[in-house]
Image 1: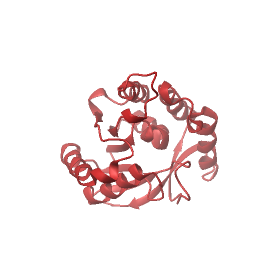
Image 2: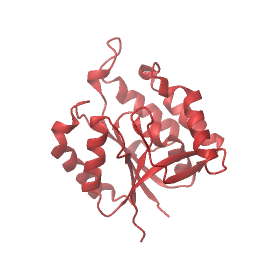
Image 3: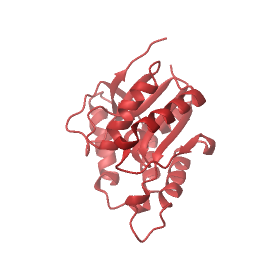
Image 4: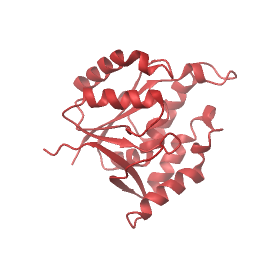
Length: 209
């Protein structure tokens, strides 16, 4: 149904965590996938790494998923300070809308408690009024989550997601990057569909044309 797809990632790795398997499936189907990261989180990089390391890691990760290099767009909004830059983020998303003209947008869910994530979700609603918008799942940030949409996945899609997340060497200490967790959540969502694996999404806006 949708051929031009936009993944909005507040920080590098968010879109892979929420949609990595779906991205792999979309690309396998020949769809045009764009990945936009609004921050490379330089303030949060461990001191033993160069400040721009996450820019290098996201390039490796999106390459592992199969996203074209020219479809990766990076910005430098300061991590944890997105609410203070709300208007500039909105302006940026409008520029992206006019440049890409996506048919569907994936963004953090409305249940996400991270201040940067919820800011991006709210500005996505403002910027992409004519698009279908799905909110992706990140359980470590969600108090609850409405599993209203599902994308069934196969083993190769989940493996690509895991391979992409392995590119984030600086983030390997985070429990939610553990392959067992990634596979377990995908298996849980797949079980709800009587499938092997799936990713679940909140329907924020559904536009049928």
